[in-house]
Length: 236
Image (cartoon, rainbow, N blue to C red; front, side):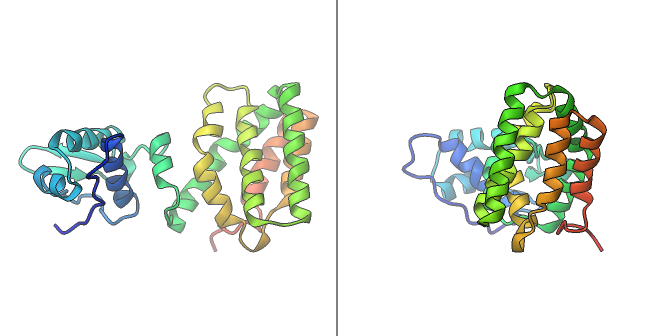
């Protein structure tokens, strides 16, 4: 198998993480497809310019994230995508800057449809005074950005808006999504907000429903945003 990896020779800190990141990005990008067998430890060690100990630590890290598995007489193999731990914070960080396929965006949208409307409904009921003040600040900033449109500024404030919804849900299982998914939220909004598609009115409905404490309206407004005709990911 011919596969070039970035040499790690000369590094003194985070060596195993550097190796793991390089291999992970090749897996996540499809360059190393599910089922592919990695070169032997000796070959990989030579390509990276590192000891077998550092290499084994890197492979162990990737195995813990569901990307790899080792089998006797077969070697180290890339696992099938459903077994990847896509909510692992480090894995999401390693994905940053990669070109994602449209299929991943569709899958992320379906995932959001399943959890975010309920988180929004909970925010309408459970958001604290401080959280409502912060959501108001974020929404005012969204309005400002929409009037003086800047694509990157919109992506940043849109990410803050949705992160705040999860944080305000008051549910300890929903709160982490607001933090862990920040990276993929940004990629998603960069894609879905192309050509100025901001859906500000839909965000206004969500904001007003939360501020009014209207659980049903908050749920409907959130789902409506993701099903709206303006959404760039709507399938034909």
